[in-house]
Length: 220
Image (tube, rainbow, N blue to C red):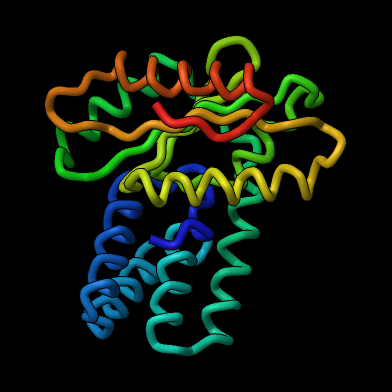
């Protein structure tokens, strides 16, 4: 997984379209480029072009075909739709856990990471706005404790989660150099014996340690 592609898509695109785009990306990863193109073109015909997951998948396909101009064109369209999604509502902590439980029932073998983030000196609304641009439609962005935020990353293992966190930190300092340190706590789902409550507690506990220590990434 490329952590640079962990961005949010447009509202109203979850469900079958999102699932089928994910399947098309898996075909691309398996080298079945013609089958992936057929699937994406069928989705384009059925749903139109105004869906960020579809544009993202076309970008991934173009990269695999080494058509760099097309990959960039699709990626720019994808990013524009991601920016337009900025008004999407945030989930609550309970809604995040409900989404996790739903995904665990339907996709029990996928990897998951949870990131808790906080920036005590940031102006109101700045952190959620930035994060909306840094997660995909299949991820979940939620309100945490106090001013903290939570981001549930779909199909992301711990090493990739660390890379995503460091990229988010880089974007934060580029966009908001005067807003202070961005504290982050990261954890990964540990399999059938894990629980949503424990998952959340590990991420928030790691965030607490990060805040006490001046903002380094901490894992739980």
